[in-house]
Amino acid sequence: MKNFTILSIVTASILLSGCGEKTKEATAKAATEVSQAVKEDTKQVVKKAKEVTKDVVSKAKDKVSKVVQDVKEKTEDIKKDIKETTKDVVQKAKETTQKVQAEVEKAVTPTKDTVEKETKEVAQQVKEETTKKVTSKEENIKSAEQTAPQTQKEVKETVTPTENTVEKEVAPKDKEETAEVVTPKEETAKSIASVDTEKAKALFGRCAACHGADGKTKALNVSAVIAGNSASDIESKLQEYKAGTRNVSGMGATMKSQVASLSDEDIKALATYISTL
Figure 1 (spheres, rainbow, N blue to C red):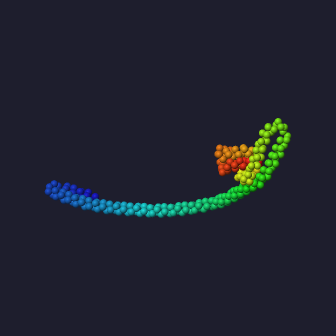
Figure 2: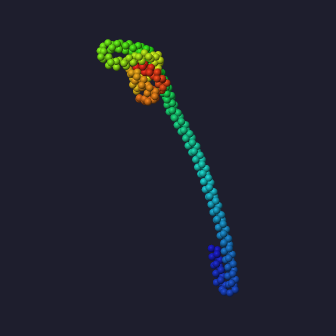
Figure 3: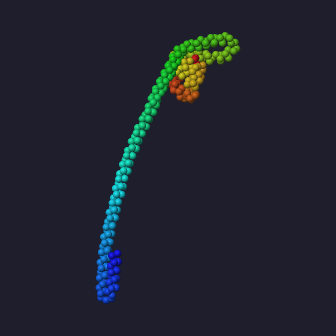
């Protein structure tokens, strides 16, 4: 507005003054005033701009500082929340773990007690069954030892009358055939007579535990009854077991271990004794 006023004055001066020297002076003066006015206005504008810029910068700094402060405060709040949340989570996890451990211990303790109790009961049952079996075997052995002499005597008493009866009743022409029938009995009688009864009885003690005192028990419920078999058949089988060439019902290894230490004489005596049962 001020510059416009100056220009108006200058124009008016030129019109009033007319042409000539005065006009030049007036023009120069007006130009100087205009220049001076422009400079003043420029200074004012620059000053105003600086003040505005300074104010803007100051406000911007204040705003930035406030934003930064807000960010710091929010960051601290977030950190605090995270820390508290983490602490709470850790505490809850700890409490949950302790609770689970307590429940596990509570569940395991009865099971452990039950297992220990059942284990003791099973051990006791096994002990009792083992004791019964051992006692039974010992009784079988004692029974075998007690009945062996009587059995041998009965066999002799049975064989002798039978031989005498056969010889009396059979005609002379049939004596040869009869001899074939009687011969095994005679051989059995001779074998019995030649056997060391006490030794044979002692040897049978190891057999009675599984086959029974009378030889009529199926060992482990798989073997055949040995009572009533001929001495030669029993002797042959025992020799095969000893040699490891016989394995009936999977009993080969067991039988071999039982007869491995027996001599041929022992096996013969044992077979003869068993044939009398």
